[in-house]
Image (cartoon, rainbow, N blue to C red):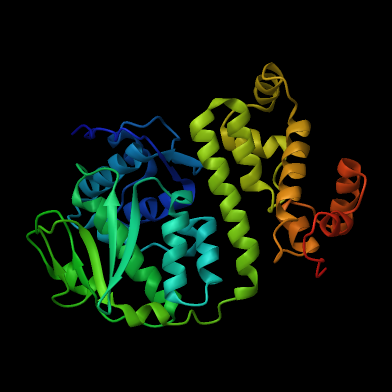
Length: 354
């Protein structure tokens, strides 16, 4: 029997899904005997589109993969089972920010701000009225099957329990799609009688007091560094989407890899799935070299980070991918003629803690 190919119309805004967000889907399929190659074929993707794991994938392709996994695995609750495999790494860099939040409310606010770093499948909103909080998820693919919304909400449930360090009280979950035949899995994942279907929107309502629940073992001292890094990633992502072109793509890739000290030509070329020679040629045609672009980005970011009063010089060096603060000091002096601390004092910033 030939492998079925599924079709779904892409939303008008396009969008991407980060590589780590794909992992739970691949794992859920593998647990049911479905390989990456079978998923690729059923979703109409090219060979090796999923292995090795790509830096990102078109959001429309991700939606097709969800349906492909459900069909190939003969699993009517595939979306729930994908969501149950969500973990810290699934949410990419903003998952680390959640670990530095003081409470559940702040973590949800960071989700509203940075979920675009993980995916463009939809956007979240949060409102509080009369002691009740409502989380609402607006899908970017309203014609998608129920697996998409169910994977998102199951993931939030599982990750929320892990983040809070205990099981969250059942909320009232509502899905806009019609009720399935089998309700047992929803009771298991979300709690008995906690889910209704055919609602106006995908929502979760819960006691607003939960927003004040602390995040156990949160390292709040890391929040300024991680938040600043995420803001920069978000800015570069939007820039790449608006401008397009090789320079914007490389800029975004460099910023993503700076703090891991992976902003090197071989790594960036591999991430963009082109050869080093091709990357160098394309940049040359755009009038800039890789090292020149890297130095330009570091200089630009350094000036921006030094304005942030909560960031110490050592933290800035880390964000820029320098293994030693002295290396950053030397580079900054080449750019400006003074060391970072002197520049910060001259421009009215707070004196460094480092």
